[in-house]
Amino acid sequence: QVQLVESGGGLVQPGGSLRLSCAASGSIFSRNTMGWYRQAPGKQRELVATIATDASTNYADFVKGRFTISRDYDKNTVYLQMNSLRPEDTAVYYCTAKRNPPYSGNVWGQGTQVTVSS
Image 1 (cartoon, rainbow, N blue to C red):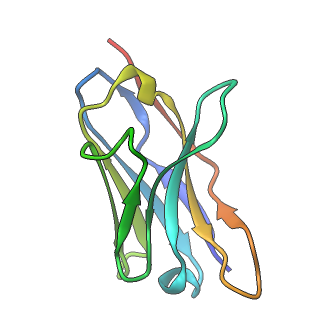
Image 2: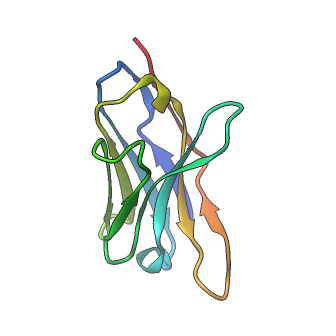
Image 3: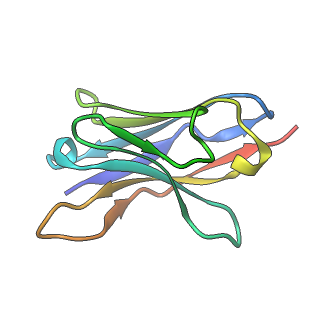
């Protein structure tokens, strides 16, 4: 029972920064692994970062050292801080929650557009 709403996307110049937010509702949030994916037109959706219930994190190689995922349990919100942005980071960014057993798959937000261009 998790509903996700992303915000914070927009237009930024190369080398700039953005912080994405994912507001979650539902009592399951504190016990779900959360993550961010992104998808550019005509391309596959790809994993950006994940954060577990103990706040341990994993990152895709192409964002490691530039992006930081975090979660605030009091606000039921997951963040993606994006620094040193590149044009190839342009995509729709989606927040996701991994469903726990006995369920499978993920819950998805509606996405927020990030455009990196000069």
